[in-house]
Image (cartoon, rainbow, N blue to C red; front, side):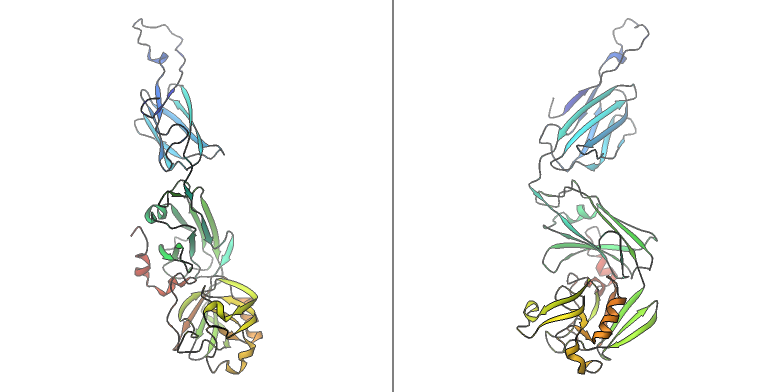
Length: 377
């Protein structure tokens, strides 16, 4: 060990021929190979670099204790090998190197354990089928200070080279979140894959990721629910054709009970749930079991069955913010829509558009403004 660098002695077998008598038989020497990370408390978040003093490296393998290998490349002059991924915290690694002369060497090191671990929640889930407005969404357990460094390790692949961008926002609960939104709605049939190579990345403040993440999904039917606050209708449009227009009653204009306008995205189909007004800041106005509940925002805007409001369907907006329909109409719509379908709310009497983190409200931001939310722009 010298200057914190482990020196590996690679034993090379001597050639079978005789020596020239000079005592300078280099084939019999043990070339020195060094690794930049050493010991049991090596620094995480650094590429692994293997260097050879004399001769050329042929191959280098750096693998963790589970057998996962760090990809890397030998330099053009053959004297160094550098990993393309960084060493993860709290991980043991084995190094094996061979030279072009047939020598080999081994070493090992362990990186220091992380002070804190950051984890993520991905949406949508693996192998799902979603609507044309569903973004890729990553919510982080802990704050992300190194946003640009994290974003560089998020790779999105689509089957048709869809144009899109990451944008950093605050989730409704205050957590950091980054979404990848296409410039326009997805094309039906598009296959999307996320490869988040975060293992070994410090999200900031000695708060580390200790694994990679991935998800994939397919874009399903091309359909939009158009909610018109003026005509009091909710219309399902598929492939540009109207399937059915349903009379409805939306939020009461003029206050907190008004509906959100703009575009929201169907987050979940929750079936029959208990809705209580105090959970959305409306006092004790209601406490009901509600059927065919389709969540549109974290703040509590749904489309659902509302038979108690039957006299208002198609003529008056008189709900506490949700889009209410008859049991039959709500049941039909519930059976047709898919997670990720956009609900485009137009007309007068809304309370504005929801924030990007209140569900998937990023469709209410212009494309240029969304691009500006990338940490790499």
